[in-house]
Image (cartoon, rainbow, N blue to C red; front, side, top):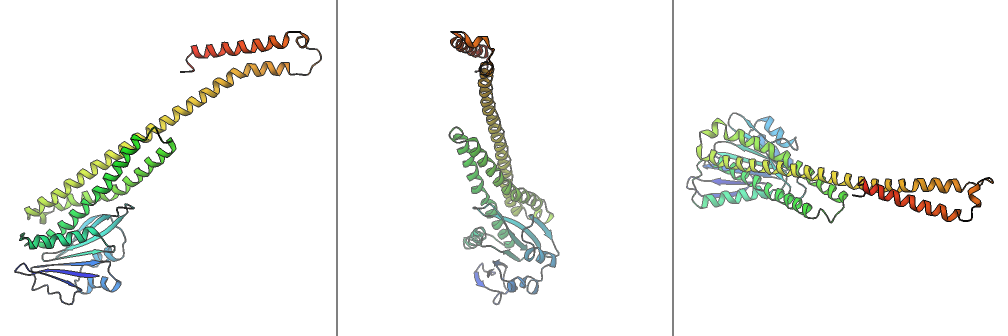
Length: 320
């Protein structure tokens, strides 16, 4: 689906669908949104707008690229990432930004683009100065995309807090599975946040944006948000690593305790088994077998030996 937003010289807003009624010459600037476009609509990037073939190829043929900025003769091409809040998978958003034109291209329905669209309409109706509207629209899209990262990261941090509080109620195996799941989700976020951070750094330091001080300040604010996200992700990854190491150490200590207990029990019963084995042999010439109190003497000796070994192990600290 293609929809258009035209801003006329008197700040009048004209919304439409398709490109038939679009008049670029009569408008101050225009936003064209390709949302879930068909194959025929994708061809308009070349036949109608005449964008660079490499940029069109990145939009249509390549499913998911690293966020980047390519500068062509009369247009700047942005590759951005949106995040699916459920799966945390990245979804590509492409922007073509010229002096009087911005074209957004995305193969999925995105609330962030819809919010930016409504936000631009509100700014215009509120009398905001948008003489360089395409850059303002690009800012609105990128800002909403970055803001959508925060709820997903906050959700992960809440789960980390729950894991710490439930550490004594769940098994180590369950906790380890949860920790590794969180690390995987943090990695998915990191794959989008860090390239977006690098992209914003390039944007705010580009020569074109430095000539527009107002827009540079706004993009610098988005860059600050991405720095905060990067720091939060790294801190959470370190926390999951600490939790992982703690649970591994705890599990090792438990296993050591179990092995020590089994070793003590085995060591106590080894001499008893030896004595029982000797007197369990069916030889005729064993003088001790004919003693009247031999049975009770051996049992008493075995009990005394066991008690002595327990006291000796306790003195050496094996039961601590």
